[in-house]
Length: 54
Figure 1 (cartoon, one colour):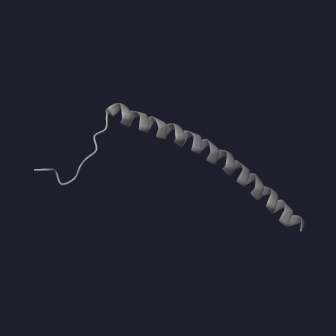
Figure 2 (figure 1 turned 60 degrees about the vertical axis):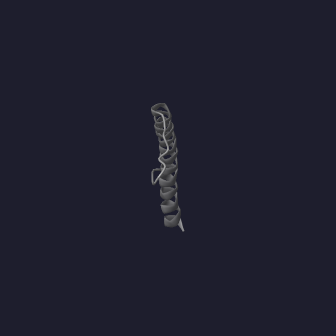
Figure 3 (figure 1 turned 90 degrees about the horizontal axis):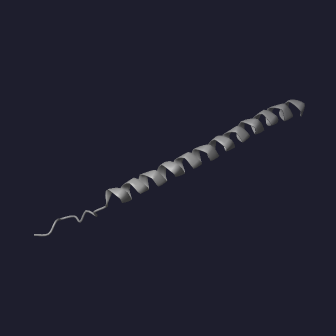
C-alpha cells in the first residue's frame, strides 16, 4: 500500500543551511529597514519645518 501523501525527505545539513541563509537575510533586511526608517524620520522633521515656513 502506498502512502496517501509523499513527504519530501531533507537532510539535516540542508535544513540547517536554509535556516542559516534565512537568518543572514533577516539581518541584512533588518539593517536596510533601520537605515530607511532613520531617513524617513529625518524627512518628516524637514517637512514639519518646511510646512511651518509656508
